[in-house]
Length: 92
Length: 92
Image (cartoon, rainbow over all chains, first blue to last red; front, side):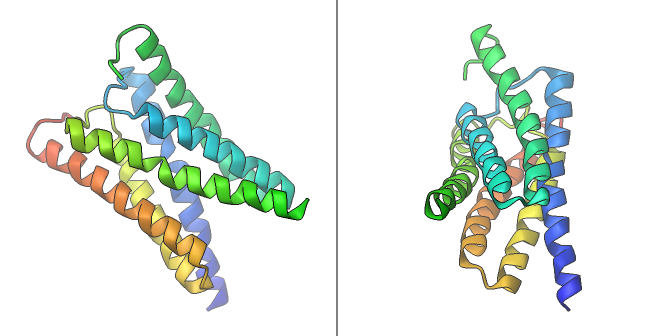
């Protein structure tokens, strides 16, 4: 029972981390960021960075790796959003 | 030292959870979902639901509450995305 429920945790972590991959691919491919929220990606990227720091404090590799990947993907998407707003290709 | 680092964890959890609020508000206000990834919100909503189940298994209220809120917000955004695709207002 313990083992099977640990799998739920790993599956949850894998899904929430990997979910930013299709968004990053879509954003890179289309360069369209109009319906993405600047507030969301700003808060999310900062939050994930803090998770990463917290993982380093706990010396927990699962937290470190998952949040390092998510931070890179969320920052990439945030970068496209800010670039498009700066170039006036996105009204915000 | 211990106490101050626990605050980092709480701040991280608050930011990553609350970050979906501005996205949900933007999506409700504009009804625009074109640049949102269907794959991301499908995987993310399922992942957060599994986190919620895992939190119930651990009897950890912080995991339960954070993921219940995020699940509601992510499902709402996913609902708008699927509705727009079904109505052909969103090419996917």
